[in-house]
Length: 137
Image (cartoon, rainbow, N blue to C red; front, side):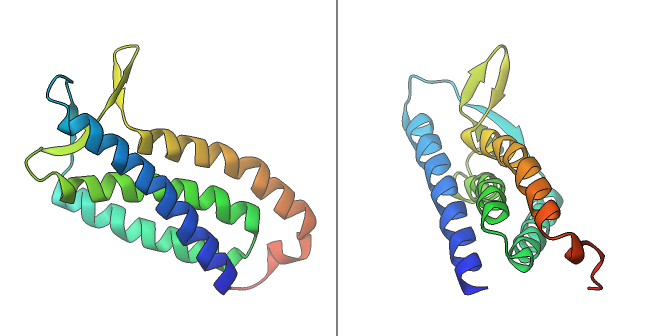
């Protein structure tokens, strides 16, 4: 369990760090336009609680592949939550990437990629651990 927790924390920390570094570069660049996705205090509280619950569930499963994918998702969520605290002068989460008329951040990409990574990881885990699918919690 400690290995799983360390892997989750390391993966999430690396992803959140990359996202925040990218946001810091873009926000500090006076020549770039930064779009902001507004978020309420209630959203922040619910997202923080959901992130904590996500982390607990990922660690309880104990699968390294699910932990890595879950860490990517968690890192994206933490990057967005931390950016609200780091840039209080902005009215929400900075979206520093614009493509096809849509503004988003590296954290948003991480969440999407992490969920895509989870699909095969969960399928393989379920096939290898069929007996655990019906365990009582």
